[in-house]
Length: 519
Image (tube, rainbow, N blue to C red; front, side):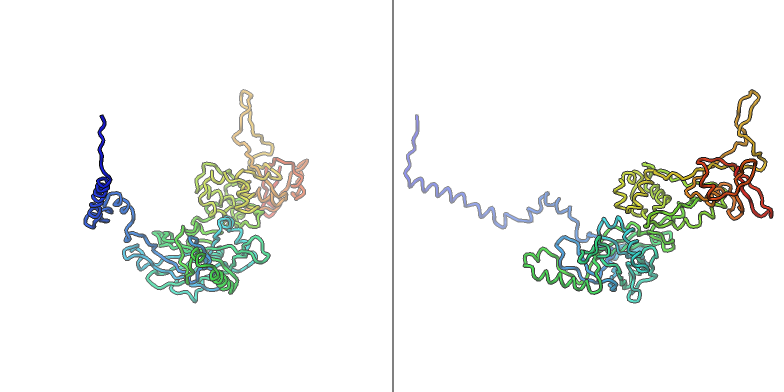
C-alpha cells in the first residue's frame, strides 16, 4: 500500500528557505575570533617538532676569522654561483684580517699571535692535479719571479713575513688578532699564461686566493689549524681588470630588468668564503725548502748509499737529501744496494708516502697525500700521464708495476782475505769422502753497471770493499800466466755478462795507497 504525500508548491518553497537559513546560522560563531586562534594551531605537536629542529639564532656559528679582499666583485655572475673578482697583475691589494670571535670563543688565543699562509692556487681541478708542472713551466719562462708577493711596506700589523724559495705561490706571516691587521698581496701571474693555446683572445683560467690560519701547538710550531677561506679571482695585465669590470657593468646595464634579477649585485669588497685547508699548508718555518710544504724531512727516507741516476724527466727535482751520498757511502762499513721494492696493495697511506719519497717522487707526495698502496696501484697509465705529465707519469707507472731497467752488465765480486790462497776452494771433503761447505766460503756480491766504464766499476768495488775511493791508485785484471793488465773502459765494455772476480788488495810502493787485482 503506497502513501502519497501531496504538498503544494508554496509549502515546499518555504521549507527549503527555512532549512538553508538554519544551516548558515552557526558559521559566524564557529569562525569567530573567540573560537578560532592561529596560536592554538601552531601549538599542535606537529608544528612543535618542526620548530624544535631549527637552531635558534643565538646558536648560529660564525667563523672565528674573516678575510676581506678590497677589490670589487664582478656584476656578471649569476645567482647561486661563486663570486669572481678581477685583479691587475702586480698591483697591491689589501686583505683585511678580522677577528670575528664571540667574547667567550677561543679564549686561549687572547693576546697571542697566529700564523696565516696566503697562497694563489688554481681553481680548476684539472690544473690542480698538474700544479707542479704548471708552476715549473712558469718558473722556466719567468726566472727569478714569484707568483705571489707580500707588499711589506704597505701592510699593517703583520710580523715576520716569509717566503719560501721553492714555493713561488705562497707566503706566510704572523699577526695579532687584537690589533688592526691588513696584508697587501701582489699576484704576478696572469690567467692567460696557463691556457693551452696562446693565440690571443683566450679565456684565462681562474685562480683562488686562499688563507690558512694556525695557532701555536705544544711543540712551539704553528700547526693547529684554526680557519681557512678563499675566493675566486682572475688576473689581467695592468689596467686589464678595470677594463673588464667596466665591460661587465656595461653589459649588465643593457639587460632587461627581468634578466638582471638572475645576476648578483657587484660589491666593493670580496669576502672570502670558508673552505678546507690546503693539503700542504702545515709547514715548519725552520724546515728546509722542498717542492711542497711537508712535515717530514726527505732525508728520513733517502738512506740509499748508492746515488740514484738523474731522472729523465725535465720536471723532476732531485731530493735534497740525495746530494753527496756517494762520498758518504764509500766510507761506510755497511753495504747497501738500491732496490726499488714493489709497492704493496696493503700499504697504508704513510707507507705509500714513504715509497713515493724513496723512489724520487717527492714532488707528487702532496698530490697523493690521501692515496694508499691500493689506490696508487689502481691508477692506469693514462691516469698517471694526465696527472704527472708524460715523463714522470710513465716513470711512476713503471715503478708501480716494478718494470725496472735491466742493467747493461752484471759482475760478481768477492773480497779476498789476506790469509786466503787464490786456489782456495769453497768445499772440503770429510772422512766419508763427502763434500761439505767450508767455514771460509766465498760470498760474492752482485754489481750492476749502467755505465760500462772503468770508473763506474771501481766506484762500486770500493763500496763493496769499504775502501775510500781516494786510496785506490790502480786496478788490474790478472791475465794469462799471472800477468797484470790495467783496467780500462774498453776492457769493461768487453767483459762477459755475469763475470766473477776475486778482489785482492796490494799496497803501493809508497805504502800510502792500494792496488786492486781482479782474479
